[in-house]
Length: 300
Image 1 (cartoon, one colour):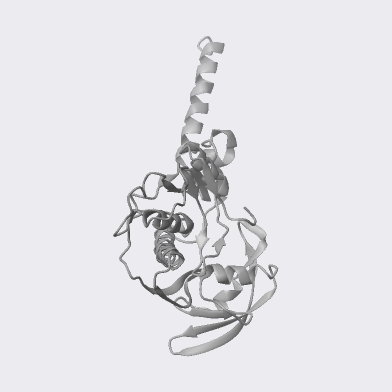
Image 2 (cartoon, rainbow, N blue to C red; image 1 turned 90 degrees about the vertical axis):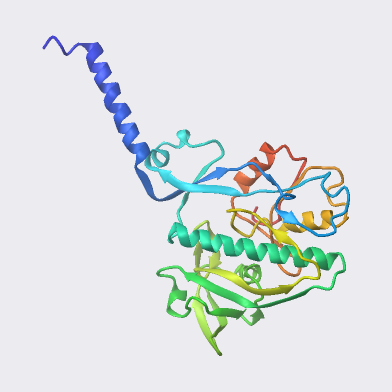
């Protein structure tokens, strides 16, 4: 057939390839997210501190975050088309709405803790109390689902008092996936004790978790009002940057003339815990042109 010339066959082939690529681009890679780089953000617009000292804004503190969106099927199949610095990760087994809610609760807790830690460091009289760790969500199929319920408050693990999510993680870090942990938790007015088998963390198979999303059961009373407006940014890892910025705005020379980015989840005692997405956060700090990037020690 004359009309089937090599040029026409090549054109038709390119058309079908382009059509297939377009379909794969539109199709979601179910169960996978793409973790993306986001340039570090200055903290100063986020925090309002009464009595801010002159010069507190001259050496900015930055916080870093990670953007995530559902991955496309083509991005899962062909790694080199993904955005620079991105990673393909398994999507959490929860709805995006619930994931955002948990992230916002983590952000709210990080703000409370940052204010407590910073003001305590400056000698203010700060009142903070944690009643334990409130269970928000239990991973489907996890052994903990046979014991715990949402709104339970975990008060100890393996005999150690638990006042925060980082403390619970630190206790679990001393066990191996598959080992058991003894939990005491409050449900309503009653206190229960149960033994729960741990499972591997999907992001680090050597780390033991109990398969829950949780938030600190935290109440604080600050001697001065500190206001935060982080927009739609979620998660707990901006706590260190928030605390450093509060110190600087109240007159402590934190940055020493440098542009400083920081990441790390704070506990009430000032302990800084490791964070996730360190690759993207490092690249985000670099894009913002900071001089120093503070990252907690450990698996990072």
